[in-house]
Image (tube, rainbow, N blue to C red; front, side, top):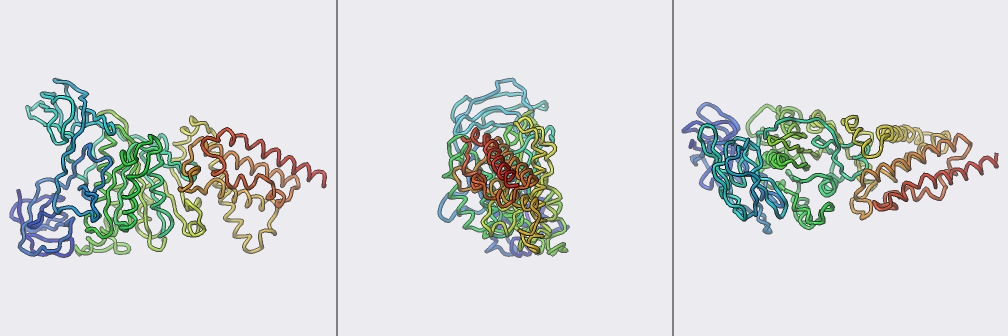
Length: 582
């Protein structure tokens, strides 16, 4: 075990003169309280380290001890339903959420297990060897570094998660004891057998996302937006309604009151898929802005490591990171204390590579045990003053496939979700078209393109209308504006607090968009037949179409599919009147 002595300290960064060998990214115990730290630079006879806890009271001469291994977290069945800090240490749930300094040892929990292997079976790395039945079924995995023949098994039944359950003997005669949990370095991606391309979308239940800008299962999405545009509310809605098996929510440097709401609300929410508490398939990592800045930098890696652990069990995981801007600010602060040459906006020159390291760990993959799982990352960004040209947003766009741009003007107009359809994009649409065909909408690509073209035409026509007035536009252009307003109100607007419309299934999305595009076709035909746009705007069912999401819930799908007939009837009446008037 290597030792060193502190020679200089500034905030979360310290230098120490070494008395033995240290390695880069080695975990450390700092000072008499054993504060958790990590080596970030090696300088001859000196190491530079960052400390993940409050460094008040540290002084030159205090000891620094190396753990002899990289900064790691303990992965196991006790994670689901838990609330942890940025280093995966349990938060007790007390009013102050205080934890003891140092690498806290998790209190052992008890689980009822059943073995899926028998004596003399040969187990490869990552293989499942037992199953936990309740409160949620989970697979117990052989660590990625272990393999061998099963030499001994404990009896099935209830055990502590730190007890030895099995012993493997490898080809060299080395013995590997298996428990319910094992450690893994947070900065090292867990190995997989094969990475797979996009195949199906992760359904979020939000129409503007699933229909216009879908994220593939195992994909990467960025959610940038200024203060008050609804990032946190949207991420919470996605966490509740998306079709992932496990949710990992990391509050990275967010305001304490926002994290307090998450910590208070999530344990009380019911899972709409099972009716059981949502917390049973959720892991919350809370690292607020008043916590040590270095721990904020580590929390992102902790979260993705947890997500990969559940992916290796053949599960689909959604990781909500709120927000990567605060994580980048932590990089900038530590970099400044190290005296590194600053890059754009003061961020370190390696900002781009660190973002790439994080987002590239999202994937749909075949795990070492042959099971297919996925990690989908949705990273919120808080650009100063909503400026999407700042470095974190620009660099993130290089590594994500979906960009869901939140717009301040739409948010101020109380339009939620405030995603701007002309600033956003989804790059996996062609790969996901086959999935939509099997879901019953072979025309999804065409309908999506028509909707986007209509919204783009609306932006152009509104600029003209501000100059000449809306009534001065040609009749066809007035009809286009009417139809675009209808798509915005009837399809893109969706309240997370509405009991009817907070979730929209793919069949309902297909039916709603089909109804609105059918209205657009009939409106354009009516204008060509001489019907005035004002007459179209006065048809009785227009109000119903504007409230389409509220008027027709999931159980009203059959009635929704019959709306085109009513639209045809009302337009036939209009054109009959126009013909007689002519």
